[in-house]
Amino acid sequence: MNEHTTHQVAMVTGANKGIGRAIAARLAAMGMTVVIGSRDPRRGQEAAAAVRAAGGDAHAVALDVTDLTTVQEAARWVEERWGRLDVLVNNAGITGSGKVSPEDAHDQVPSSVDLDMVRAVFETNVFGVIAVINAMLPLLRRSPAARIVNVSSHAGSLTLTSDPDGPFAALLPSAAYTPSKSALNALTVQYANELCKDGILVNAAAPGFVATDSNNHSGYLTPAQGAAVVVRLATLGTDGPTAGFFSEDGLLPW
Ligand code: NAP
Image (cartoon, rainbow, N blue to C red; front, top):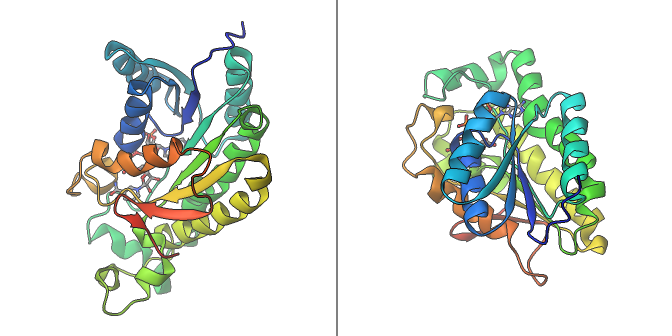
């Protein structure tokens, strides 16, 4: 059943909607075979069908990044079909708050945060990324030039959020989402350092403020606009950067 495709094979987690779906659509439009990870198989199939209807090659796989069984099963499924993975985009993420309006985000204020919510956010945004990368690494190592992109956020930048004169000082203090993205940035560097000897480039991307369900569609960028920097990092040439943090405007400070 191994198709041994000559096309590049990409997996995007949380690709049934939002920025992940736009990343999947763009990578497919560029000619990649795209695996749409979705914790709800039906919505994953629907997203894959939409990509195929636009002329791309997309396949849905059940993948909940907090459920190791589905993560390992997804890796086995990709191995059976294509034998390798060229691109992994760790996009799945949660804010922890219902919808991040300024009111909702109050529940992340450090002095009164619910520790169970912090744990849930880290489980998805940080530990889930480790689970997925480690399950996919044997497949990524079979690619001649694998790329890993972790979808982070400007909010994860300690430099930006600690600047009292910068725009991010106005963000509500958060003990959940914001530190989860700082931890994801730290993980990005550690994986990049380990995997550079294998030619695997690992970078973090900040999509900007994108209108999706996660913020009640209050963002000012479209999912396709938010996806652009992720797609760029997923398609870097061999001389591309690793251990970097980028927005569409360029390098961001950690
Ligand atoms: P979204 O529309 O809410 O999409 C999030 C995706 O992640 C959904 O497909 C969701 O699946 C999936 N997901 C959540 N938990 C999961 C789990 N345990 N296993 C697998 N999939 C899971 O949000 P988005 O705005 O597109 O966010 C995508 C990424 O961009 C996130 O990492 C987010 O932190 C980051 N980001 C977004 C913005 C922004 O302005 N929107 C800014 C900076 C960074 P379900 O449909 O099943 O819930």
